[in-house]
Image (cartoon, rainbow, N blue to C red; front, side, top):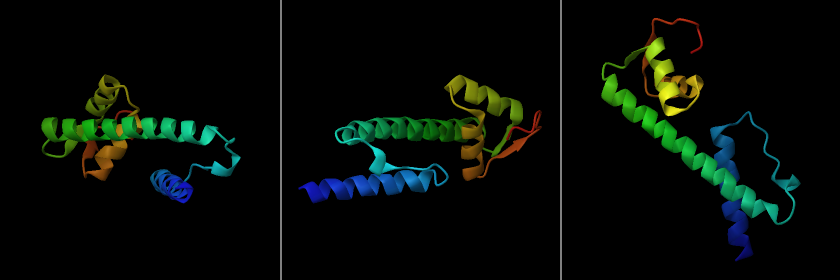
Length: 107
C-alpha cells in the first residue's frame, strides 16, 4: 500500500516537472507529514491553472474564430479572467492564435 502512494507521488512530481521544467522541485526537503498537505495544495493550484487555461481557450474559440486577437483584447481578456497576460499569450501560442497590433511587446 505504501509503495502505491510513493508511485502516485512520483507520478505527480513528474507531471508537475513536465509542465514547468525550469522550476526546481525538492520533494526530499519536505518535512514528514507535510507531504500530503503540500501535494493536495499543489493539486488544487494545478486544477485552477488548468481550468483557467481551458476558459481562455474557450473564450478564444468563441470570440476569435479567425485565430487573430489584438494585443489590447488579450490584455482585457487577462484582466477579466484575473490571470496574467503571459498565460493568455501562452494559450494563444499553444493553439495557433496570432496576437496583432502589439502595443508594448509584452507577448
